[in-house]
Amino acid sequence: MSASSTDPIIAIATAPGRGGIGVIRVSGPDLSAWAEALCGQALRVRHAHYLPFRNQQGETLDEGLALFFPGPHSYTGEDVLELQGHGGPAVLRRVLDDCLARGAAIGLRLAQPGEFTQRAFLNERLDLAQAEAVADLIEASSTAAARSAMASLSGAFSAEIDALSERIVQLRMLVEATLDFPEEEIDFLEKYQAAKRLDAVTATLDGVLRTARQGLVLREGLHVVLAGQPNVGKSSLLNALAGEDVAIVTPIAGTTRDRVIQQIHIEGIPLHIVDTAGLRETEDTVERIGIERSWAEIARAQVILHLQDARHPDDPLDAEIVRRLPAGTPVLRVLNKVDLLEVAAPAPHGSSMVKKAGPTSASQAPSPDLGLEFGPAADEILRISARTGVGLDTLRARLLRIAGWTPGAESPWLARERHVRALEDARAHLALAREHAAHSDQVLDLFAEELRLAHESLCEITGQFTSDDLLGVIFSSFCIGK
Ligand code: GDP
Image (cartoon, rainbow, N blue to C red; front, side, top):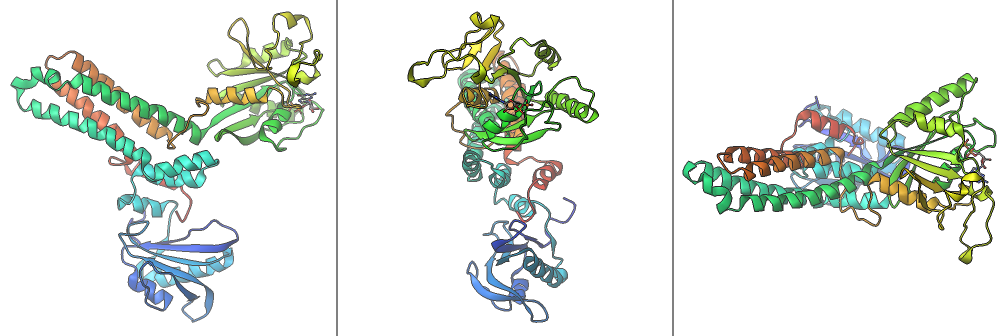
């Protein structure tokens, strides 16, 4: 951030638009005299004062509550004034403009996105992982994500990282103490059971890493691309998974000309599903552009759901699509419209078994629950009906598994990509340290160095070591007023 990190700052903290109340927040190192002049009365700390918000000419702009939180016991760690008025854009704007005009003398300026929370971090009210959790809590798109973000915000994730760091530091201190007495080096590893201690720390770190990966899935979700020929039911499947109409469904081939991205949740995991233009040869220019975009989406997908018509599982055009799919991206082959297949004699308990039509039925008999089927090359085939909903639960479960989510697993805290990367770095340094410990001759300094690097990686998570660039990236994605 280019602007000074001690200027007094102000922002409308509530969301744009109309609401019951609207909050304006001001933070700065020494605001008490200014706040009292603004409010026209003395403000008892942390007390709600009901008063008119008057401008310099004495006109009442709004009325509401003023609260003054002196630093360091405030959100930012500085003096904070909160004005809670009516939540309309025009009225809030008037109060804000008046505050700015009257704050010119003290250098008051508009806050940048995330600047309040950045100050909280700089003033050590929060560590970096907690500060990120503030944004994650606001952005959480499911109750599971909100619950985990709140746990991170209250420090559950940071506590795990700090405990790990502490154990690594202790081990490092032992090593470094020994380095000062070279004659003891040879015995060190043995005497302090360094390898055993290191293994124990590594095992704990592995556990944290596993949980962090789940937390990352919960935060980021999975990018799924629906691919297939026109009319196989891609839009219908998207609608069935989403539970609401997001794409136009018509029986005319080639209606989905552009991509539609829909976010749905399965067990709280966000799935970003891209519906693509049906893949086929076409003379229509607009449709062709749509199809080119489809291939571009397919190239970016984390998983491709290749949808086919269950009545034509061996369609050569599908073989052609399969041939063009990028290697290395998992592909789920899904046969849709099983409801149109010849229906077998009513199955017990009303389960909807189907008998597949066509010559391949003998080799590809559906599993009783219309679930997974593994062909010769571990080629997994799911059978569904977007119309009746049959097989959709299995499909959802399969998508979760690909996302890396263990069904029923709790993610005690949310994690970001950079957290997982830092944990992986720390893990790699511990592994190197372990190698040095295995060859106990004269490598204590290397052992110590790897411990130092592992510790540093962990500290990046909570923000003891951070660059301004990283802070800029993290806080600029916040909303204004937070
Ligand atoms: P898209 O072009 O692949 O997106 O296909 P649509 O979702 O537009 O579906 C094409 C047609 O197939 C529509 O008339 C749908 O109602 C129909 N359809 C889609 N899924 C099913 C299904 O599972 N069973 C049956 N019977 N019809 C379906």
